[in-house]
Length: 171
Image 1 (cartoon, rainbow, N blue to C red):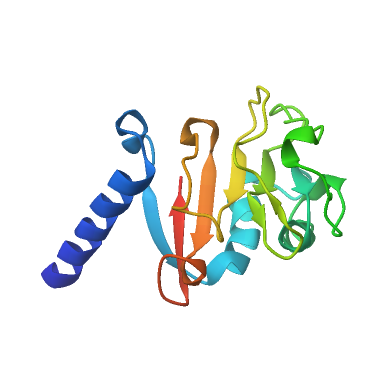
Image 2 (image 1 turned 180 degrees about the vertical axis):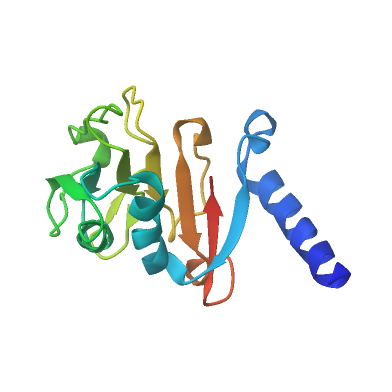
């Protein structure tokens, strides 16, 4: 309906002003999806791998990235760095290797592992040709982020920006 489309357009405009620098804003599509963050655990490999023999690389720094890697393994080959117990050290001290597209269809990172206490205040350094997928469910809209280094980001809304069942996806 026209009323809904007006609400959607206003919500998208507000989010763009809040999270993106002007130079990045038009580079991304904003999607409002159902299913929460767990649905995106499957959506990333289903949309980015393209075939079951493809590989996705997961930086497993705690509970949420371990769950995402386990879900992705149903749809593609998963390589990973880290463990479900989390790396109890500052993220900037982690030796994270961002893969090239020849090595993986995408790399996955949870920017704030709330259960394990690991938060990335900036994305890992390094050049990568594979898209970086970032689960920002618990820190979306809470800090500046260099979205020019992100291929896909998602945030389940109930953590800090909205109602249960809504997920914001940036592509």
